[in-house]
Image 1: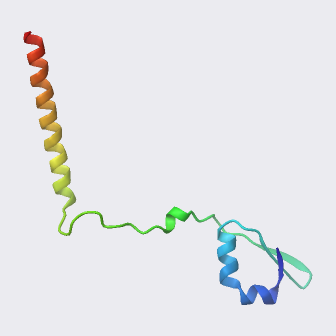
Image 2: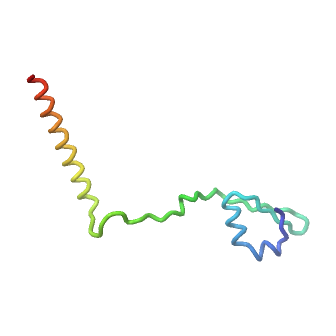
Image 3: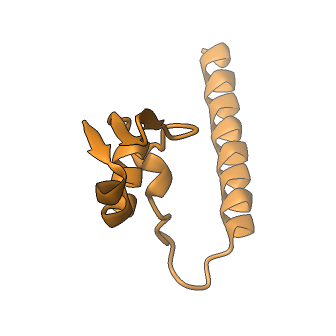
Length: 88
C-alpha cells in the first residue's frame, strides 16, 4: 500500500506497528517512494511478560537443594535395588 505523506503523519503509530509485523508500508513524498521497514521483525513472544508461578516467599535456592536431595535419594534407592538384584 502506498500512502501520501499526510496519511503517514496521521497514522504513524499504526503504520509502524504494521511494518514491525512485516507488512509492506510505502509512502510517497515529492515524487519519491519510501518504504517503512522494521530493523528486525518483532516476535510476538518477545512481548510476553513473565508470570509469577511460585508462592510468595519462594526461594529458588530451596528448589535447587530439594532437587539435589531428590536426585541423591533416587540414586541411593537405585543402588539398593541393584544390590538386591545381584544377591539373588
